[in-house]
Image (cartoon, rainbow, N blue to C red; front, side, top):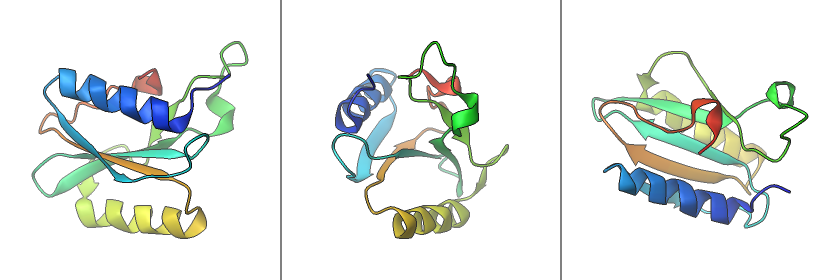
Length: 114
């Protein structure tokens, strides 16, 4: 059974805070099963976006984990990330948007057991 989105987001933000990274919920989604997108602002005008991973990367032995994939291999201008998030919101208004700020780009989502 997968954790509710609201619980996962709270735990993720707590992890970021513990590491000295500012993070906040920009948009609350569906409490139970809303998709979660994580934007990491690098504080130089660029950002990384981590989106829910496609179903093909899930391991059948651990189907309850939340996995994330970077939307691009390298940082992109923040405006590009914002455009992608606006598109996601039009498609699914129940998504969560979490934003963190870290010059080093730390995200704690490494294929991603946050």
